[in-house]
Structures are given as structure tokens and as C-alpha cells.
Length: 352
Image (cartoon, rainbow, N blue to C red):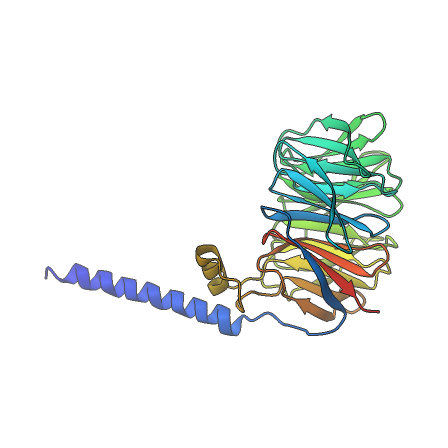
């Protein structure tokens, strides 16, 4: 009788190990993400100057430069062609958000310290600091005319900043962290998304929320308008990318071939393709990487290129050894940039 509890304990342990084994086998053999090999995009260079995970990457309007930022307390501005750093923007803490102004002369940054900062792009000179957020700024973007910056973060408030006067207008309505903001091409609308699983559409002139999109079942991590302003794309923790019609705010297509959350989405300049960045590493790959630093064939798909019209998956890319947190198309449509938790930024050349 005294051995019975031990037997039961061993049986329980054996059952748990069997469950784990079945889960790993399913993840490795049956849950394989779809892979599409094509020659649309090829790797140009990897930028390796960051010392911590990189959260955001953006192209300058003329596509010659990129700005990247993340957990390390610096924004790097560097040449797309060579990876040469042309300016470093020092911060007191991590910098989740960075954006170029539409004319390329300024860079805006959002930091853990709750400050929006405006810098001169040519030499990295600090122009202005806009305090006002309570806690981390997760996202920001310039308006198309460059006169405003929209930012959002931990304090659940979207803030609109006048870049000349510093005047700020708050947009309240989110119930949790705000992860992404995007202006429509005409500058009349702003989309914001967050941990509360919603996308909110704001009228810039009135500051009023005019629509709320609630089809996602988990946090909405990224939003982007198409270049002609007719569509909105969103990426979510619910492992889907959605495309919405702006004229009636209906979801017209759901892309569900990701096997993990979708961190970033971006339209090509001609609006014909959409890229999505995600975290697709499998169980064994995660265990080996985080415990032994292994970067090998268990890495999953981290970047997908989609046909917007029919939702066809055009190409998948797996160069990063960890999740892709940010994606960007160059304005000329010739380049894609991806920022990753593996501390690198990849630049991809688009074949015509």
C-alpha cells in the first residue's frame, strides 16, 4: 500500500511527458506553416548594430536611409545600401517607436520615458521634446503634411501633437495599451489599435471617434492604410491579418496562414501587395534558442508577402532567427525592411 502514491505519481509524470511529446510532435510535423519559395524578394543586407531586440524600422522618404530602434536606448539612422551609420539619437531608455517626417528632414521618436522627441535627420540634433504621455510610448507616426505627430502607448490615450507649437490634443476611448497608429493618405482620418482588441477610427478635424472595429479576438498590434486610402490592414495576436474597406468599414478578407501573432503590416506603394511580419518559431526552436542559442532549421516563417486582390500568399521568408516586430516598404517599392527580436534589421531587394 505504501508504494501506491509513488506509482500514481510516476503514472502522472509519464502521462504529462506523453502529452508534451504529442504537443511537440504536432507542432513540428503537423503544424508546419505554409512556405512559398519565389524570387520576389532577396536579402540585400542585415544590419547588426543593435544590442537588444529591434521593434521598429522605417525608410526615409527618398529610400536612401533607414531608422531603427528598440530596447537599447538609441535610434540608429543608417544607409540602406551599405548599413553605414550616419547618426545616432541617444535616449535615456528604450525607444519602441520612430518615424521620418514626410519631407525626410526630421525624425520623431517615442521612448519608455513617455516623451516624444523631434530630431533633425541630417545631423541628429534634438529639436524639441514633447512631454505628456504617462508611461511608455509604443507607437507614433507623422501626418501626411508633416504638421502633426500621432502617438499612443501605455496610458491608453492617442495624442496629436502640433510639430510647430507643441500643442497637444488627446483622443480618448481605448481601454488598454495602444500598439499602432496610422494616418489615412489624405490626413483626414487616424486609425489606432491596441490591447483592447479594437481598431478605432478618428476624425482628425473634430477629434471624434467615428468607427470602432471589433472583429479581432485578441490584441491588434499593427494597422496600415493602403496608398489610395480605400483599404486598411490590421495584424493581431489572434494570428490573423485582416483587410478592411474604408468606405463602409467591413472586413473583406482574413489571411489566416500565420501560426503565431502578427506584429506588423505594410502595403506596397502601388497597393498591390501586403507584407506581414510575425512570430512563427516552433516549440523546439524556441527551447533551443533561448537555452542554448541555437539558430537553425527549426526557425519558422517570419515574413509573408500577400496579393491584396485575392489574398494569395506570394512568398514566405525565414531569415530572421526570432519574430519580426516591424515591417516597412520603401516609397519606390524596390525594398522591404524587417526588424526583429533577434537584434537585427534585414533589408530585402524586390525583383521587378
